[in-house]
Image 1 (tube, rainbow, N blue to C red):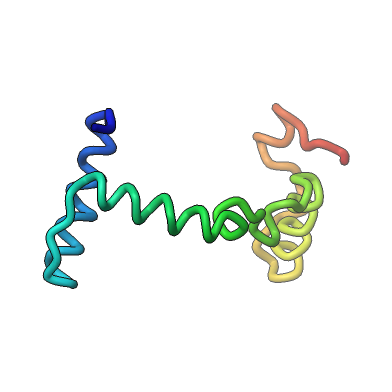
Image 2: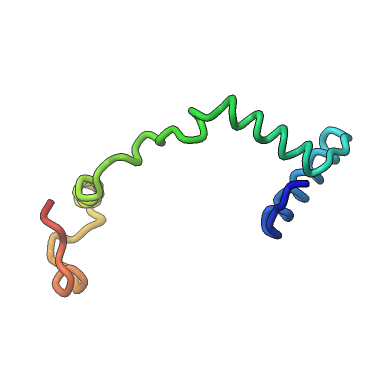
Length: 91
């Protein structure tokens, strides 16, 4: 029998309840884990694929956000108290 920590037990319980409610099937923890592992194996690329847009460097993001905020007049060109105290990276 597989050893599963308490948090994972809660997840399994929720999955089991959903399966019982939606599909009227009763599965054991082992059957649920088996199906999840098979599904994961077939979809490894999707599980670990980097999401588009997340690879943008932070400094470019900050400049883009400030630029858009200035364009829509949501950002004042004068330095805020935080900027004066902590500065903004110049990357």
